[in-house]
Length: 205
Length: 138
Image (cartoon, rainbow over all chains, first blue to last red):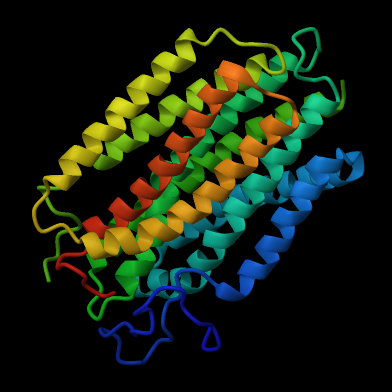
């Protein structure tokens, strides 16, 4: 991470409570932003041209990664993280969280925007479609996941990075925020199983 | 520095903005479920109005908070606002591309504005509330 540049002023401060100097925590990995821009432009082109292949690619690739990462973080990484000491959690989070700040919102936008367009193009939104009820079910699942992720998980993710950038990070604050992250990641991970059931059902009708 | 995880005087901005976000998400689900037909707008509009009231209440409580780390709040908030404005713009683009218009488009647009304000508020408030001194660590 030493070659990365912080997008926010002051992120070069190292955590002062540790004897060994740790590289500064970066809030947003700037090197990833051009990749996100390319993905978003590609998504706009896919929707504008109604390209079935491109929309399917965005929806399947984005949705698969979103579901897989949510399940893995919620049910594998989260419980492991919860059992680590606070310094170990901080060390892991300093490298893990900035990547999640970029990856997850990008995957969510990819999946939802392309999925909406695919649903319209395939006629799944019409009330006579056998998939309509399943799609409404998926809206509800995604809506609950989005509310939890955006109201609790994402703010905790970013706040813990700021706390670790302080000269004297507060261990209690980091523990509180990480606990929030672990629990909400587990809830969204479990809810992703419902998404898998719904999407495989829609694809097979 | 205090060992406490949070200030006991913190206003319930997360709860209010979170509820505001939940209402526009529910309203959005109702709107999307009726697409491409024209939905009955009464329930989504009621949810939108309630969402605005909850968000405004949160903002008022926050503005009255003394010693709040406003620099941290705005520093994070402006970047989060940019990111979620792009996300909201993508959703708006999808509706426009599929010929949404009139009152349903207006309601969806206002819901997306709420979404694009709620989420940055939640993120920037969560960051700033843990800054025990104004502008600490920034």
